Image 1 (tube, one colour):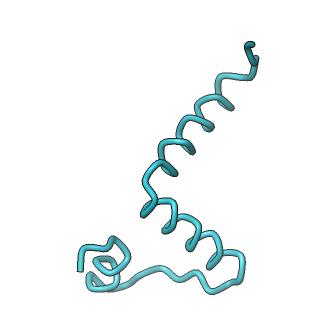
Image 2: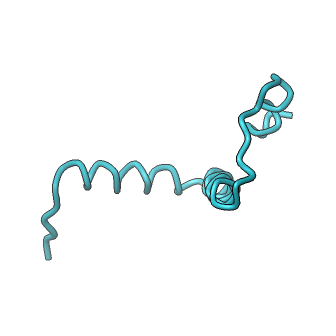
Image 3: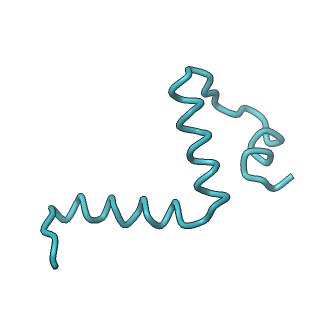
Length: 57
């Protein structure tokens, strides 16, 4: 079976698949989407906040 889709859609699908492959990265992305949806998304302003977000504490 083959599926035909625009190249841009296929590239987006591949990128999403790649980003969600790692359970830790998938969790971070889900958390970020949830923060954005509930309006609590913030931009980190300190290097300590950036390290905490990256999991490199």
